[in-house]
Amino acid sequence: MAAFLMLVWTEISRRTQGFRELSAGEAIALMNDSDTLIVDVSPAADFSNGHIVGARNVALSRFANPDPEMRKWQGRSVLVVCKNGQTARQAAAALVKLGAASVAILKGGMTQWKADHYPVTRN
Image (cartoon, rainbow, N blue to C red; front, side):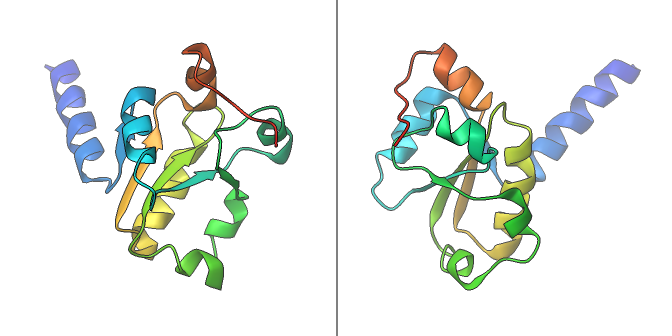
């Protein structure tokens, strides 16, 4: 019974967090929308080792006190990426509070993206 309640609680929490978790294939469909912003909150060293084409590297610390540039993201669709998908959750929650229209994270982060053999760039 306890395991069932934990499963129900986890599902309810996931549905009320305000952002979606997308597989790499689902993320590509979202990225095909030209208005989607890709934000990578990985440390700069990880970002330089390979990231999704068109992604912006934004330090997680910037989400604590969003600056004017980040406020322009209100009303936009945003895909948040990190190394393994955990840090992206924090940034996604901050973007939901900021008022981004649609927020999603890449399930498994860049680790899964690379394991699935999707393209990366170092530019």
